[in-house]
Image (tube, rainbow, N blue to C red; front, side, top):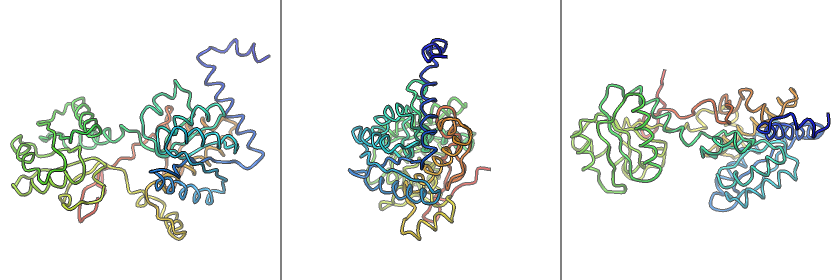
Length: 368
């Protein structure tokens, strides 16, 4: 059937998806006779260069382990860099791309990669719209990183179970991030039938939080979630103890920051991501360190992203499907455990966990 006649019987709403799928499949078929190239986008220049170097190190180590060829491009965490990186991947005949830590870079790169039929495993971009708009944009992307709202969803789920029946308060420090976290938690709690006994805003970067501790004690709250930085949470915990106020304090992933003078109170809870090296395959961690690569930051997520890209490419070749379909059709074995993606392109699991601060370190709390 001639192409124009075939197109005429395909509903208009379906044509973009079919065209993308055909393009992705064609790219894979063309690459099957030669060595498959995996692109890696990382900010190797500019203020995020240290993070980009972590991506590079992890991707190179993974490529060596899985026997893949990679093409690394500097996206500089800018829209211009993202476009340049995408063009470099097209020129290198990459069949799939990993990396990207910044929204500006990936959003500039995706139209070019979509046109070339190149799928993307985003390593570090959390912006919800990246995948929320996938049905509209047709961007061939999944993300290894959590969504921006995964933190509040995990906090609502974990603390909602643990604090049911308790008097609790919610406090934020007035910043956009903290307000969104606190408001999201409040709404999620209320949808589950839980209502905060007290809601307040702290003044950040003060030498003491005696006033806030006093207001919390007066409210009767025995538990409080503080959407704020580690130093402020630490000072609140210290001052609560000084006035004899026994309260369980919880916060978000920012509590994993380095200590600044006053330490967190023992028993402080955190909803946060794991230290990747603590949950990674020990053999891989050992190999990285033998090669003088410390598995910090984005090293292991980049390693896992390349593993996913390699496995998806092989699965697509074996089944004759396109790579984007392969990315959504299975669970991948990675250095950080099994990872799968839903139809929207987000992870099927929420990687946030509950931790308790004990002995100067965060220890994971068993939720079973």
